[in-house]
Length: 475
Image (cartoon, rainbow, N blue to C red; front, side, top):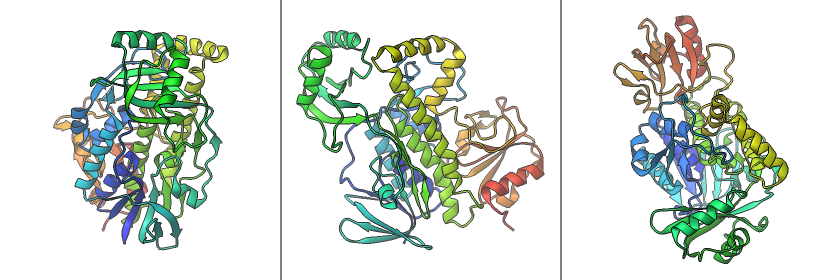
């Protein structure tokens, strides 16, 4: 019997599996597809996800496979410079194709002891007071204490649970693929630039090996989203928008995506939880989807591990939904807004010009980029210090950096006074006595996901926070 079964071996499921394994949880990941996908839906990691990788000691591996960008245009494609003074030690976007992210997270999860079973489709779920029974397509069954559905926007787990997925259906489809072209790069670039003056869902990005990543609006909304488009559809739509199909040929893969916006009514039903696209879908504007899922997993992993280990304080696991549901709702809102700003209609274009003007103010530009990068996320943990509920950036300490101390996924008390104690929670929380010129508070208590749950210098208040987030002190 496993402690946790995860449905779906995408970035969310893989990140969650690794987080659980850091705490010794017995976990298996079930993936319907026999082989990893070659489709490059996501192109990079935003700053908060880069921080997540740094917190777990993975960033060097990702940096070796990616490229840093500090360029504007992430909010609705509005051309404004990358803002200064973002609250992070990693103020950039890391360009890295999703299949590479999948591979690196797979290697990380497997190295920690995760079992991944491919070609293994979940078709049934039943739960009782003691656990969950999962039925597989081959007729076999598995038993676990918990199940987490990380199986995408058409989540089987969510449907089997009967959890509502309200929102708006797709109003527009976009075609996406990798292929070669028959025109000169200069000609292609000039045509793309002209079309993008009015149609921002159009582009051709060189991939460095003679192929291009091509994006173009579809003719309508597909009834069957599981069937990929044909190369002829691409040619037809390219001609419709650019007057030429650029002689596209030799497609590596072709796909389509819509602008549906939906969110699960709840993220938990008994011993079954949802994360990533299984819990929320939205337009890809701003490149937030993969990042949102990874951050779901980062929030959920340590909480579920504490529940499995029998040391979770009351309400800890439920705080996953209360914290992450509003974050996803905000992403749905900003992607809806971005899609409106990308419309070719006169009204939205007028609003776009106004937003472009407002983004000329540094504060507005920073605020919107903090939304896209998730650096602005603050969980509602009640009244207290300004840091409460926020992530803490990777501050420099006298003997290194903060994130170097967080690779194990434990809580951390950073004590600049040297006079505090977390002795009763030493099996769950590391007590580090060190100082930072970047931290203007005597001490902070961090959760394993890097969010601040206490700041101050009073031992009694510290112990209350330790008990709230890490349970009863050991004898």
